[in-house]
Image 1 (cartoon, helix red, strand yellow):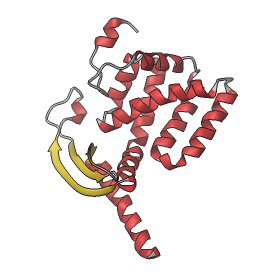
Image 2 (cartoon, helix red, strand yellow; image 1 turned 180 degrees about the horizontal axis):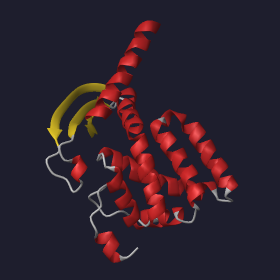
Image 3 (cartoon, one colour; image 1 turned 60 degrees about the vertical axis):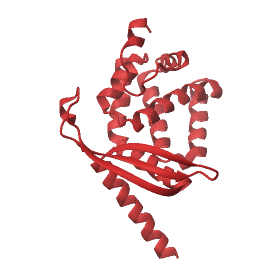
Length: 206
């Protein structure tokens, strides 16, 4: 990537990504679009249900075998892919911002568009999973939230969009840690719906 592309503002991070991330996304370009889509679907399925880590590893091993790749090399590339998606999730990036950032990181237009489409269709599921995981793995001590409306944005359709900024205080055993997350109202209501189902299940089993 050119020095100009690296200097352009990225949305998923305020820091300059490491050279390895550019290299990893460059390596993803080596797959044809059909293979890349299959790999991306595997990654999004894992983000939506991280508890299926064993199945995720098996799917990566199968993919590596089908494409004559070393599994460790593939895991390194996927690690950068996951870091990007998790950072994008924390900042609740729109599909357009995801596509723009991926192109700046060196991914082709067709592949970046493919990921942004998967991002749009899976965003509620992976947001719900991230919040559930935070509260399942750690004991919730306190929670604060702040309601807001997007007043200005480079994307016209996001202006006037309602959102919630959440701050969880969780107990991680020997220390307490603050976890921040910003979600849209549909994502938050979907999360509450899932929590109600969990509560009902627990009451039924108790």
